[in-house]
Amino acid sequence: MDAPVRVGLVGAGPWARIFTAPLLARGPHCTLSAVWARRRDLAGKLAARHGAVAVDAFDDLLTSCEAIAFAVPPDVQADLAARAARAGLAVLLDKPIGLDLAQAEELADVVATSGVMSQLVLTNRYRPTMRAFLDDVAGFGPTSGRATFLGGGALPGGAFATPWRQEQGGLLDLGPHVLDALEATLGPIGEVAAVGDPLGIVGITCTHGGGAFSQAVMSITTPVEPSGLVVELVGPHGRITLDTAAGDVADGHRDLGAAMATVAAEFAASVRTGVPHPLDVRHGLHLQRLIDEATEQLAAAG
Image (cartoon, rainbow, N blue to C red; front, side):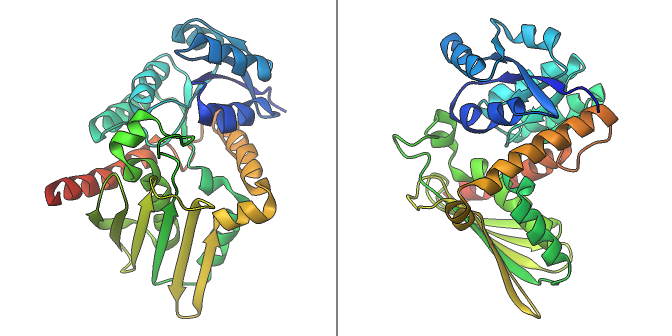
C-alpha cells in the first residue's frame, strides 16, 4: 500500500473543524500533516486535536506537504491554491473555486499549466446514497427534474454566517451542489434562466443537452430544518427522489461520514496515480460559468 498522502490544511473555521480536518486525519489514505490559518490560535487548536502541527506561514505548508486542502473563503482559496499548484502540489478544493468567474478561470489555468492533480469537494457526490441514486438513474431514463437546497446557515448567528456568504447569497454557495446534481442526473446543462433575490431565494430553470429540463430552488437565509439537497426526477416509469437531509436525520450522518472517507481515498488515488478525478478544477470552472450566467441575469433583473 502506498504511504498516506501528506496534506496541509488551509483554514480553521467551522467547515475545517467539522469536515475537512477530520477527513484528512482519519486515514489511511491521507494524513493531516500541518494546519495554517490567519488566526494562529485556531490553527493550533485544530492541529492539536488531530495530531498535526500548526505552522506560522502558508509557505511552510508548501515545503512540508505533498498536497494542500482548503477550507477558506473562495477568494482566499483562489489565490493560495494557485500558489500551491505553481509549487507542484496537488490541491483539494472547496466550492466555489473562486469568488467570481475571473478568479475561477485563473486558478483553472494555473492548475492546468502546472500539471498537478485537483479535486473538488462537492460533498454530496461522494455520499453512498448519492452514488446509489445515480446508479438507479442510469436505468430510469428521467426526462425532467427538480432540486432544492434550503437552509438558514448564513442567517445572523448561523454556523456559516461568513461575510462572503452573506454578501453573495445562496447561489454561489449552494449552486455548485445543485447544478452538479442536476447535470449528473439529467445531462450537461446548456442554458440557465434565473429569477429571485440573490440574498434570499433563487430559482433557476435549466435546459439540458439531451432535451431534458429541470428547476432548482436554493437559499442560505431560509430557516428550513433539516437542511440538505433534495433531488426529484420524473420519467416514463414514475419518479425517484434523493433527500440527503432526511437521510442524515434517519441515519445519524453516517452517510456523510462515508463521504468523507471517499473524498480522501479518491484524492489520494489521483495524487498517487496522476489520473485526474472527474470532479476536478475544470468541473468547478464549468459550474462557476453557469453560476456567473445566472448571477448576471439576477443583476440585470434587479
